[in-house]
Length: 258
Image (cartoon, rainbow, N blue to C red; front, side):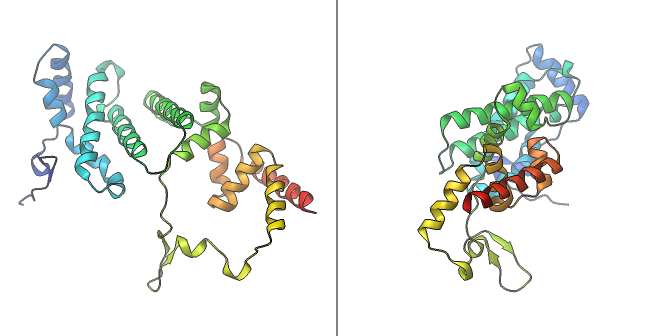
């Protein structure tokens, strides 16, 4: 069957070679011994891995050439730092590094600005998550990251959330074959408008009187729309605890608004 020629950054993706595990191991040994061509062969033999990772990011950028080059930078870093003594497949070690490089590029070129301190914390968290994932094969919990980095769980979640890609208000959220419903349509309940400034100020004051965790859980539940189980997983606590905190927060709001 004929393969279609698709070029990215001058690379014909139809002709990319895929290395076997044995070939990879041999090339890493040659590279450590000073073979000047082994590194290049390792790069060329893993370009399809880069392309497979870029598929999940392709909708977030117009110029795939730029993203491909950034992915290759992550690949080069992985090749230069990989050691056969790690006892893991190169792809297991390499994928988080490529993904991290691409995510950093997308965040640094995002039109929404995030404070440097929050961004630095997010980078530390993601680096630590990648290291622990490679070391143990499972992602660490929010609670564990909080203890290792000596910051609050709220700061961990806030830093990671601040790095998420923004969603367009014209993002389609539902379609049953008829008219599509967009996020924009859900931003305002036109049947329940309330322009009473005094009430808005009272509600704002009541929310500000809540604890930091209570405010966060209410925001995630009723603004973001997450389930109690999702929030419990993020905070590393039980769903029952989330339910109790949520109920207490709502009771406190009601009490403050009386």
